[in-house]
Length: 418
Image 1 (tube, rainbow, N blue to C red):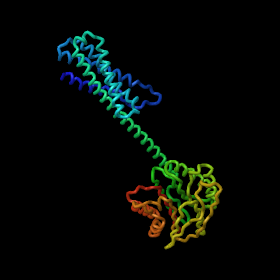
Image 2 (image 1 turned 45 degrees about the vertical axis):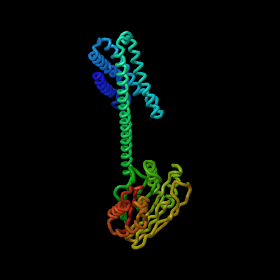
Image 3 (image 1 turned 180 degrees about the vertical axis):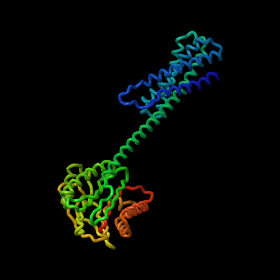
């Protein structure tokens, strides 16, 4: 009996090893031929169990001193029956019972496994009924051994299959995530190319700007523009939503602004044209806030139109002026009018255009950074180079938010009158 149970351990190890032959290697390439892994597995399984059957027959014959060849025949056939019974219980039955309760599923699976091992072995023994009747104790021994081995092999195979499916599922998720990250990296690079690079040199203005998306891509946009007569212009916009849809709408809005800016000189009329175009090309759920401004270096006059955007700030000494005239966000209602505001600037005035990612940055307690805090920060550094001012604002936002992740894109454009 000890020899038989030692063979049991060998059987289980061989069964699990042969099961690995059925594991999927790599997804076939399109158009390539595919082999039948199940047939390959069954062939290897049968060969392994034939060897196991011979080992069982030899062990039992040696232990009890019975003729080797009848034991060999019955053991080999029984080994094959056990192999297919364990295979069926581990791989065919579980998917059919997947919708049942765990206890009920385990019970039915065990009964199917036991029935396959016991009745299959009994059917094998009927191929030589005289030997079975003459050596009844040996027949019961082989039958019991088959049932135990089948249970052990089925459990090992089932555990292996569950681990394999989990690994395959994790691998698929990892591949999908890597593909998504590659796509987002491409989108980030495309969006970065759409934003302006170094600020241009403009008569009467010193310019600087930055856009830092909260995720890979975002819906904030800013641009430096120029009229046909050389007058500089600025635009900043915030698209509703985040991610790729907002980035696509941002690219469309940028193209519209650039195509209209050279021909439409009044900011209010430009906002009206942008609003009508966006209403016709997108759903009502997609809209944008935008601030458009022109600057005349000869008169230092700033004309602007604010379409639902945060008012631009003009820092002048201890004063803070807000550019509020305009209208509703663009893309909501077609045919809406937009006002044009005007403001005469003075040398040293600092104009700040920004999105809500700056002023609505939350502290750990929930308090927002706020426009007043931004104005005080700009006022304290209004004589510094604009790139340094932008970095100071960025550092202040990081200190303010602490461990809280950015909730929105951060875009800031500064213009100082010379």
